[in-house]
Length: 212
Image (cartoon, rainbow, N blue to C red; front, side, top):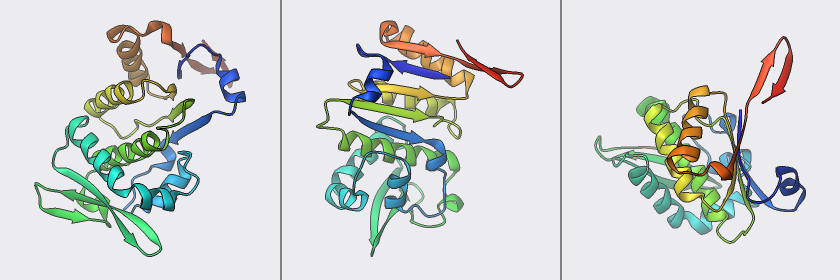
């Protein structure tokens, strides 16, 4: 399923022009016990030419943005992240203030998968936000990013995308019919953006596929 926002151009035209494209794929943000940030950013195609330099140059701003987003937009006030430099690599550190717990390894042992997944999504999308500040032509491609998110966090994610990526052209793909329908209602009905979105369903039957 593809949900596409069109800002006066067909997507073919957008791709053929030299516009920056920020893409994120769920297979590249699997929850692991230790998150090496340079590898994470390199694998998720966020458009950062030198991830190590980007992290070093934007560390404070990035940490502040991620933590503010986790608290305000995903209702996780007890969670906090920071970046630890262990020459020559950068690692994600996660803290739970309520449990007085701080970890940069064995993350899946101490934090549930849903919360870690939210942290990784917010981290990557925060990088996209900071990296795309000065680019007038911005395209965000999200490919099946909600597999590990519960209903509440899916709602938070839709609201977050709507709030902070208004000026971006967005392509959102999902295998989840419920998430597709939720996006459809939110963007086209609740926020009255029917003219800004085009919806496509990819159907498969007897080894054949069609787009409707």
